[in-house]
Length: 345
Image (cartoon, rainbow, N blue to C red; front, side, top):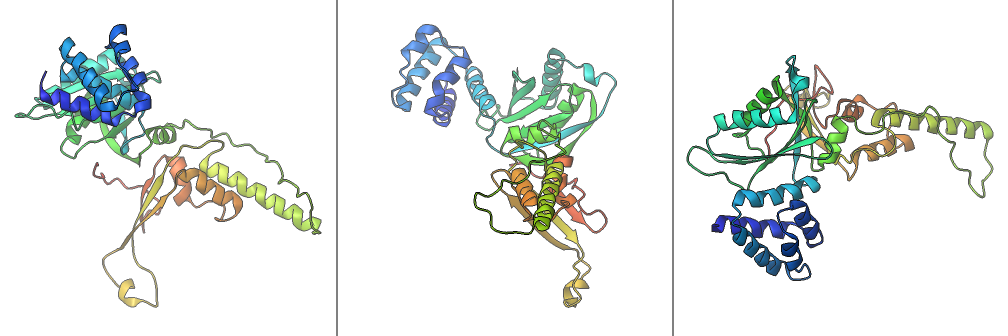
């Protein structure tokens, strides 16, 4: 085995938290019972890494074999890096009958026709997701396993989620995906985030969208002060209406943990007191970004509590209704999502 394999293993072991090492190695399934028992997980990680490397050398495992360990860790811990959603369009008649073995064979075949040196690993997860790890090379260099692209696709659906993809690699991946899934083209879903589970749930509608028609009235205070019953009745009705509209706009129950939404403004500047800006031929441009640990929940709470007006503006409700978090606002189509292909990180 070469130094590249050892360097990759050392880097991977540093990346995996100590409390997850034993479980990850068990799922890898490459170690015998004796080899597993020989590893002391109470030792410093660098010592454990050296011992694991000795086992790899003893078994003459290649770098490709060690990358399986990374793939297992990423599948179990997907909320890392920045994920981008894409949607396949115009399926052929047999698109919905493509099964896993057929997809794997054709994807490998098509991508290797486009890229001379490429390493591809494909694994089906328990939730029916097909995970792909792609280490890219070119006509003159071997695949770079330190910067792989990860792709998640659910067969029988048009949804694809990608992380760590460069602009040079994008057309190659997309062509292989389109051909192997029996679709005509693929487009940017204008949805991205650091939590794969959140953007998947949002795009595939995997969260509660059945909205109750009635909500319980607010709790009565222990020592209520004197108030007008007619005013209380009107306030209670307004609160129930706000909560109803907030849930209709963003969803009910636990919501996907989307962390941001971006609005790109490209429109004419309108202010009669500022003619220099108003009379410009160039459109006025700015970007507004909302961030939160759980943006949908925050927006729902703002609407239901009265901090934001109801009914909720389509610019905000489109996040959940359209499954997007990147929008371009123009004079002709306010709230229309942009079709611009954003650069990958």
